[in-house]
Structures are given as structure tokens and as C-alpha cells.
Amino acid sequence: MPDVINWSTSVAVSGGPTMSMVGSLATPVYDVVEVVLTTEAKSVTKAVMPADNQMLALAITATRYDQAISYELGSQTLLLDGPQLFVGGGMTSVFTNPSSIKISTSTELTTSVTIRILVGRTGDTPPP
Image (cartoon, rainbow, N blue to C red; front, side, top):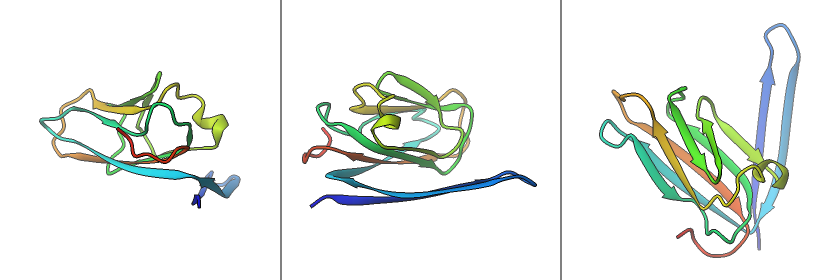
């Protein structure tokens, strides 16, 4: 029986429009991965899913967002300057072969940063 990822988000422009979005996505498997960047470990790579699976959803949150923090997933490198949510095959298809994620900072950290990653995917095996 598939798991269901329920998601919601909203944005509001001060003095302008508000948009709210909610939905759910059935996913055969999900994984949660935690990465901690520290003053000693400025770059960490973790497996997020088996290479032969298809990503269906991706959510990334952090204890701090910064233009100096980035992640590499598949063939893409993106800044982690805010929470990230990718839902559905159209959004997650931007990541080619996303079996592992590398999170890095280009500056010295004074405190650790914890990043949580939720991946909804096909398949039934844990990440390598």
C-alpha cells in the first residue's frame, strides 16, 4: 500500500495577492535523510535513493538558509537559500539520476546547520 505525502504552501505579497496550494501524492516509498554541516564538515554527501528509482517528490528544509549553502542533486546545483519543495514528475525531472545529494557551504560556519530531506520515490528498497 502506498504512502501519501500531503503538502501545502502559501505565499502572500505584502499589500498584494495571496496564493495557497495544497495537495497529496501517493508514493510507494519515502525516505528521510538528515545532513549536518559543521565547522569541520563543510561538505557532506548522502545517498537519497537507489539509482534505478524515479523521484516523485522532494522537500528540503534547514535550520538556516544562506546563499553560501548549496546542494548538488543529480546534474543540478541549487542554492539552499530557502525551503525547497518539488512535487510531481514534472518538477522532479529536473534532477537527472539523483541517487545522492551533496550539500556544501562556501563560507566558514560558526554554528552547525541541519538539513532534512524527504524523498518520495518509486521502488521498495532503501537507499544504498
